[in-house]
Image (cartoon, rainbow, N blue to C red; front, top):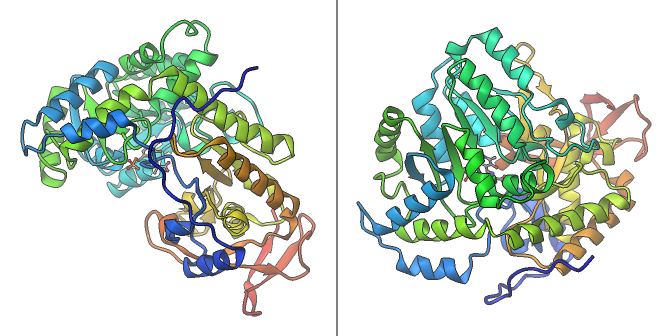
Length: 489
Ligand code: F0G
């Protein structure tokens, strides 16, 4: 096998500030052990997200200079609209400053209190926007989705029978739309097959429900279809993407992912009346419908980015780089969500750190340790982010999986950066038994993972406490915390 190289060369560089372990310990304390609260300059390799962190190409920068900043009717908008229509194929294109703004406008116009929105898996902002309106967000992934070690080519699929059961149970009139997130970010960046999109569409048609795609990583999803789904090997990724959208009635999009832009988003629909309502609301909070909260130069950069992300040598390199990271750590024993996803590797923190009970957040504990070890910033996608409570008892319900996501920004890091990440993960893996859990000291009402404050917990008896026993928790200042006697899961 020949080496797959980065299909670009570097024109502008940004220095990385190196830090010592002692410095990172201090930064962690200052950030209350929440990696979102770190200063980015104190991060050596930033794998927090692939969102808005892409390196723009020379073509994107030059298009930005061409950006026309007219308040209304900017030619930059029409270039943007033409590109979106060409790939996505929808009648109406409504720009917004990022994906969650598009979500808020879509759900505000379509949902009311008591509505139910099914999705393969809602991303956290999608869920929060639905719940904020008093509606319910229901995740219906296939069963394999919750089994990190199980290999399945389209683990992002929706469980079609579960969708039918839900519609029959709550009634189609309570469901304003069905969504499919491509790729399924919350559990591994796993793709949705064309067969599943078609099947979900046919169920929607049977009940007269519109189907929307959360299209953030549409190009990666289309590329997985080309590589894995029979009948697509000879089609271009762009043709496959067009077919994906042809089965839907609209979409929301964050251009910060597969738009290769640093900001931006949009929503699309084929419904004239809905589009008018969306544009009316847009003017209230985002801006006039030919800019939607974006500068003309942003619209230009997105238009070019949407074309570049469909280049197949780019997608081939991206998948190869992510697979390289996943395969190297997995072959040393680190449990990861299999197979590697399109934008990230997800470590199964619960499997790696079985000594940390779920209510001591093993994902957060591992993310802290990777920063402490090597200045690598990752993101917990587990019970901290999930933040679900039993409506009756008020007790926290653990997330179905405790993952740590290593998201790879587009076109930013080289192979030696990835090698550095592999070495650091393997060092942490070697001493995994000594990694302590964490507790939450304070948290906001919504989306707590962004601002919650944590502190580490030491166990009495040290590491290696056997499964099924209770362990008394001692806080860092030596106080025993009797209220947190926990059953080790
Ligand atoms: N949908 C999905 C599947 C996402 O992954 C995101 C963002 C959004 C919607 C919201 O888009 O950030 O532009 O408002 N995901 C980022 C991430 C933040 O790190 O995965 P946004």
